[in-house]
Image (cartoon, rainbow, N blue to C red):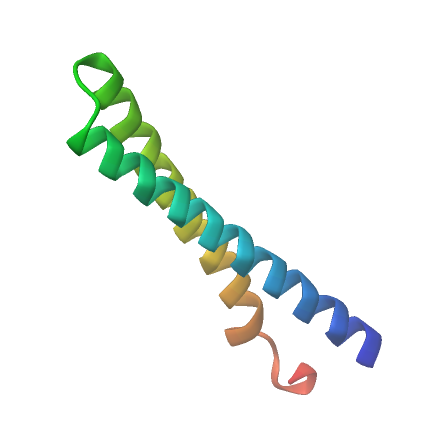
Amino acid sequence: MAANQASRAATRRRRQLWAGVLALVGLVLLVIGVTIADGVAAWVEVVVAILLLVTSYVVQHLARRETVYQPDERR
């Protein structure tokens, strides 16, 4: 049981890390797309940035769901 919980904790930490990386890359692309890029490239960067930020939110939600919504006997 302890090994299973350790595995779940490692998976949660890994998902949180990926969510953070995706959010950071999304924010950087958003800043570049709004400030530096011009024309079609700016729109492409902004759309990709928004997709990365939404993906980051989904990954973070999946990681938190396992912690918050687990049955009481597993806590």
